[in-house]
Image 1 (cartoon, rainbow, N blue to C red):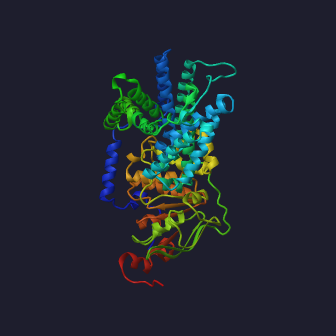
Image 2: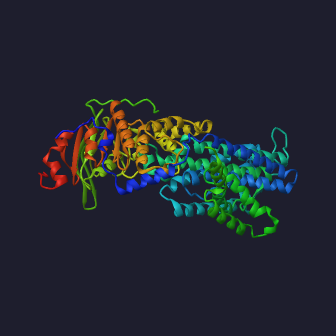
Image 3: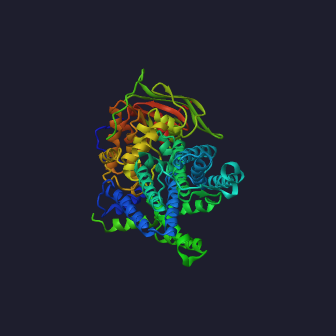
Amino acid sequence: MTVDRTRPAGALRRPPTAEAEAETEAGARAGAGRPAVGLPRAADRWPPLLGAAGLALVAAWAGGSAYHQDLAVLFAVYALIGLGMYVPFVMAGSLSMAYGAYAGIGAYAVLVAQVKLDAPFWLGWPAGCAVAVAVAVLLGLATARLSGFFLAAVTLLFGTAFQRWLVASEDLTGGASGMAAGAGPAVLGWHPGRGVLMAAGLLLVWAVAWLVDRLRRGAWGVTVRAAREVPLAVESCGVRTRALDLLALATGAAIASMGGALFATFQAGVTPETFTLDIVFLAVFMPLIGGLGTSWGAVVGALVVVETTVNLPVLDDSGKLVLTAVVLAVLLVAPNGLLGYLDRTRRRFAPGAVRGGRTAHVADGALLRGTGIGKRYGGVTALDGVDVEVRAGEVLGLIGPNGAGKTTLMDVVSGAQDLDAGTLTLAGRPLAGAPWRRARLGLARTFQHPQLASELTVAENVLTGRLAARHSSVRGMAASMLRGLLSTATGRDECARLAADMGLDDPGRLAGELTLGEKRVLEVVRALAQDPQVMLLDEPFAGADATGIAAIMEAIRTVRRRGHGVVLIDHSVDLVASLAERVVLLDSGRVVFEGTPEECLASSEMRAVYFGGGYDRT
């Protein structure tokens, strides 16, 4: 039996399932009538401009009133703590509740510098940031295996313990009465007034919010947000998600410490009761009120919190009750926050390539080699002594019935599952460790069920793969953070072009709005952005239409032309046979046949596996 490799992709398409057709129709309806949008540049410019205008209004409102200046500085302190929590909580999905302690570290660092060391107050700012970062990293390492409620509970206990330590360490912190500076801050003999300090605090809030928002939209921020939703996919792109979490925690702690330092600088005093757990709980709600989609949401939320809990005299002691009602109203009416609601309203009325390929250096032509691969789940043997080899410039097809072990083989090769027996090498080097380690060696994969960050755009999802290809080390990720502060467009246009080449013409569209077939294509694009030596494709054609199938087939040929390898799993034997040079037939976790597509299709093993009958299983 021969296979016609010249047939168009559409002719190879198997009949779509009812679920795939329904999802395709739903996706078409979602996209109908919407103009194709490019990368959202204009929408990125208006928040800092409105933020500057809003903070100027706050400064004008405060004027020369001492009470109003106190409120303005309190708003700035709350905003900085909220921005500090925004990075690990909203961006990275880590609910650490120790940010009252980090703010306290910043405040006490300023006063210790002034009172205990007789040093300039401003030395306490970087010292507080450094100590807060160190504590955050140590606490992050200690709670690395915790998440959700357990992480929140442990870090809350840390905050409580830190407050008790401040009371007990009277020689250093002044104990329960706290610390106070005899005179206000001075810079080269100049003593700035309260109005100047207030304006400087508001300017600091604007600068930090602007920088955090640029960080969020840069390559590092996109990868952090993707890791929050699909950590396995990000690890498979070569990014160590734990390192991302630690960087996010450290960044947030430094920002929160600046909030405490601002308070101590303005008030020239602090007590252990200044930064209680109440502030931490309020900081959690700030981005929910203002909007999770931008760091400016934390600033807006801080303004609402101060206004409802402190400023409105008619509320007396019921400010927190009113704030609760405000939070509930926002969640019901504007679940994306106040800024999210405004942005949605604005949109409603608005008119309407990858880095050079890696060179594979392989002596014997084998890029990926597995020998005696074994995997067991309890008493079930999923893989039993499997030998597999992928050569440079080759497409290897893996076929077999459901439960044959195809996806399990993908999982153990990529590191998603541990290997129970056998060895793996990639380009002659041992292939072991977590998925991010293997991806750095040149391994990329897609998944049987697409692993995409639904709240990120098409271009941002591709950007996660590009970051892995260029900035996968901790030092590289830190450098990527700094580059993101300078330019949020790093690689975004390149990723958009790559997606467009594969038929995804709207790079600003959210991945959650894509049809199943488009999600398959997007996963392949993300894998291509890694510039892999070997690409593992797990059922990439499932749910794709003729256009998507043709695009994925061309991507596979592109990887092959670069001299790299592809492992292809799909239930469409025709599609696999049209692309693969060799085919491996799996059944019950064992290789029962290996050869060319023509030989496999004509074999008795093929007929026995798919149509029944016997074959020699020894």
